[in-house]
Length: 219
Image (cartoon, rainbow, N blue to C red; front, side):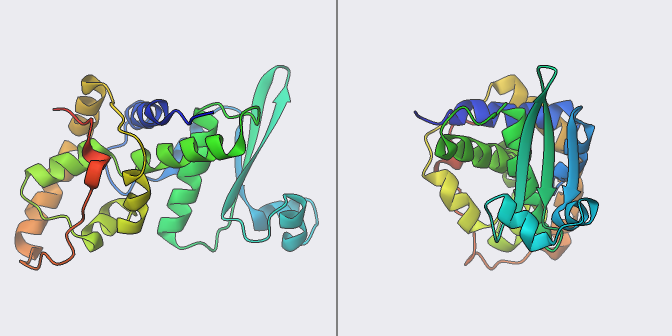
């Protein structure tokens, strides 16, 4: 079974629009908390809630070094999700982990499809959510040189993160969805542009190579 990368990219874009995300880095936590039937808590909070050692909780989940994990339970025919996370993660890792778990929920993953397919789709969703192509395109169109450092600061993604996306098939998000995301981020982009005019430098040694990640983006 082949992962549906295009659907994952479209759903991520629709999620940005539905939640009126206007600034970066994108924070998946408030989005998760708005979804009916979703409970979000740290592994530590869960261990305190059930009076079990944190490592014991992770072992029950089949993990010993997990950044985030989602459990789904069907109640009265409707899915109920418990999203757990490691609150000790660095900010960018926390962001990517929750974006991935959000992807599982938005994409309706219920365990009926192969795990590797679900994980590939969720990671694709996460990347398109926290590193939106319309945002990247709009920033580059202002003339700002996007270095690895700048990319990390504005999205939480780094070149290693992008390298995974370069290996995936081309995806096409409808033009109108891309335009809506661009419109939402426009004030943020202009603020970034005015700031970068004074903070920019000519060192291009660490410019980010987006490869085919930008394929399929249309004005």
